[in-house]
Length: 328
Ligand code: TRP
Image 1 (cartoon, rainbow, N blue to C red):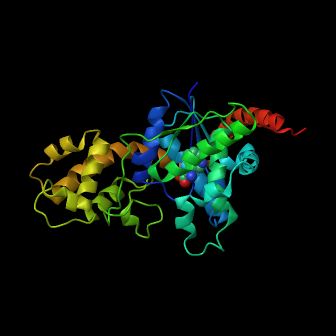
Image 2 (image 1 turned 90 degrees about the vertical axis):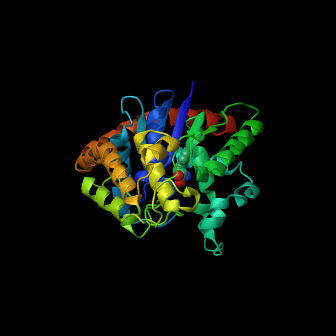
Image 3 (image 1 turned 90 degrees about the horizontal axis):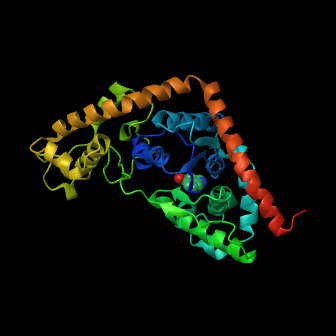
């Protein structure tokens, strides 16, 4: 059996980068795998969160997943904190994880920066929780972006350490799914930075709640350069390259095909083409997203259904784990 577990943190608005880079692939994976998709609220509190914003963000992410095409008949969407097995298994796995392994995690080093002494234990042990998220479902495959590859590697190491200690093959070693056509989406204001929910300028990103007018306006205002046509010297033109990538990705064509389509066009021509395809592709999603956000009770129902299914699987794993360890 092939089972997928993946997670997305509920922090602020989801945007086109999240959609093209991750969620769209999650939708496709539903055909070949049993899929469990988790809103990682336990991970979110590794940095301070305002309670009302956290509640809102969890519902927003859930709405986005539904609007983008996660099929609730097939897949589960659930909020991580409602399934206590994640925290429970994280403790147990922490007792099988040498500090040396955690000390290698580059994301912690980057986030903690120079203030290591003030960094929180939760931020440091976050990869152990991530291992628990995956292993508690005995997930075989995990779609992740580049930035989470090292954490997934660690999950495999932790699973191996547990299996060796109890002389079993209890936890399958989870395989990363780094999807070939996942698109790296850059800021509309600065082509060298990733599109990000934390960028101060809302013009840097297209949010999944933006309507057609907002999408058009943002693309129109996207940073341009002074080359006369789109095709020239793209390696040195991050903004033009980004718009072209977005166009190709939304239209479902290769970059070469996209380039051929805009041969001879100038920057504003490319922007026009992109606006059309972006509005056509995203409008049904953003509309559905706004409808869902107006129905929080429905969103909560979806989550409880997902939680029930997740608890059922996770509960079975925990029972076996406790027995292996020797808990009464
Ligand atoms: N850490 C991931 C992120 O920040 C989210 C996440 C939490 C996750 N648990 C996971 C992803 C388990 C894959 C599997 O993006």
